[in-house]
Image (cartoon, rainbow, N blue to C red):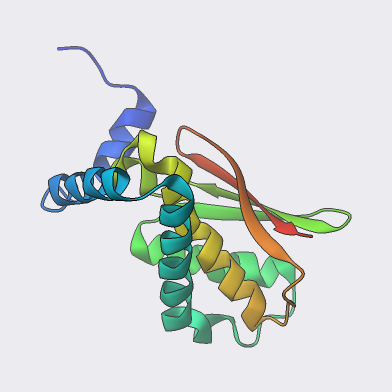
Length: 152
């Protein structure tokens, strides 16, 4: 028996075997019925709704460090990996590692499933007072790592 890579081992642990075939079938059906832009927008809205349900965790956050800590507490409880926030000149870089999106929906669905994290983080920053001019956008993913940018 060949040893799986460390990444594959962790990916296999992320999504319940009870739900994996259902989520993969759902992703295939969605991909056949809508284009990437529409699916990304749908998942953005799902992410916003998800953040709405947990927004109380972020009401009194005053620093980027405190936000990172609060987010990581949530992600750890959900087994959704962890996040690192880095302040740039006019943006915040969001590095989310070990989110189960690729495992749940398949690597080919990352082009649209990343919308879930875009919508989630967008709503969190809105709760913290960000205006509509600042937007969260996924800028890349590799393996279990997803990079997003919050800026203009």
